[in-house]
Length: 529
Image (cartoon, rainbow, N blue to C red; front, side, top):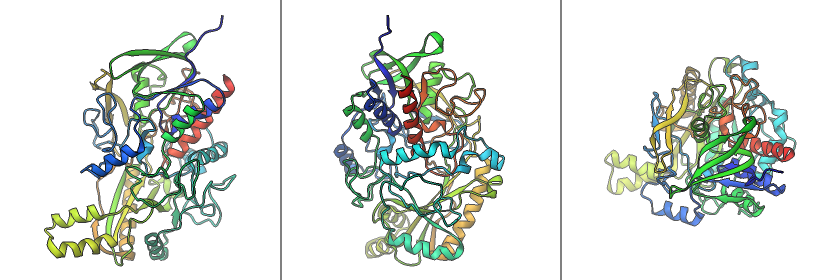
């Protein structure tokens, strides 16, 4: 007598990673259920919320923040016990946090994946770049990535495309803005190499999404959907036959015979408890929530590494006025960067460094600063025009190393459903701090080459919303949560589709890598069912 299941596969989380995995399985004819703790909200409503909000700088504000599905800015949801206020901008709704990302879609370098072997620090991945490359291509095609096929993305100006690619990007990049052209020209004599940032943003109609129209509020929402967000593949998965259940907060994974996961328990906003069974389970929440679910379920943690090794690209910033008008705010909010410190022998001494050039309309920041300085009347109008045309914003990120002491655990505080929130203990490591000193010298060079007045050049540590390490991948089950397939070492039918598996942070946004791994694990499950 065969066992009856509610689905072949249950996916917990409907963000970009979970929805891509669900879509791959559903279109292969597998029965799939997607559970999402948050609600479903149409794009027009998010745009309206943003337009009517007085808190334009809070990128979580246009999105639901419900008693059973908090955003991570809610103080009742996330508490900190370390020296750093770890508060990433994560969302809970159908489509997940890629509703308000900047859509940077980078590949890791081969050396990023063997940091320990090459530079003697951190950890190696249990797979290499060549193994992941075809899945990177699949992920770029799924998200619709535009990028340059002729650049050395290591920042070392090696004269050839790097890292190696099997195919071109699905779309050509946008033309470089005037601001970035002028800044790159000014910094080239100082040895800075401008790199076009690959971006999950359409430069032509693609996958039923329009081309970017340059609305310039990618964060907190692209009003027309030219920028990829996870709701795209949540919808694709449903059309392929998956069943999506919003407002369904998973709170326990149930173990059964053979140490397999046999069921997931979720709770509705009305407090109703539901149990669902499946052959396979994919936890596709973000790096904090995935670890929390495993910990409160008491699964997948024979290594005692669940929730540990938390990494973010803890960052700093530079703001200055350029010596000439460059008119930021035209086109996408993030287009290019300087990667002189992405790879090299220096990584034995200090972190890799990435300097991104911000391109958001700066008028609100400019005006707040001038009002605080007491500037009013006609002079205020003149200064807004002058400063906004010259506003240069650099967002710097630093590579960090996995540290078991940096961790997330369930909080003693509980939400409206009685499910624990998050407690985070995080300290920025000396490796990143050494990199910051190098970046400060870069700031000095940037201002000398192109600056008129420094606004801010030594910020405190900043969040970068790149959650890695909490369910770390590795070759040894004694110090790792999942293997190279993203399969739990403890439960062979449990897979984790989250950037939390990433064991070495590098210095680039991890989302594309997470999607590549998610498509790959879906293919593994497809072949096993």
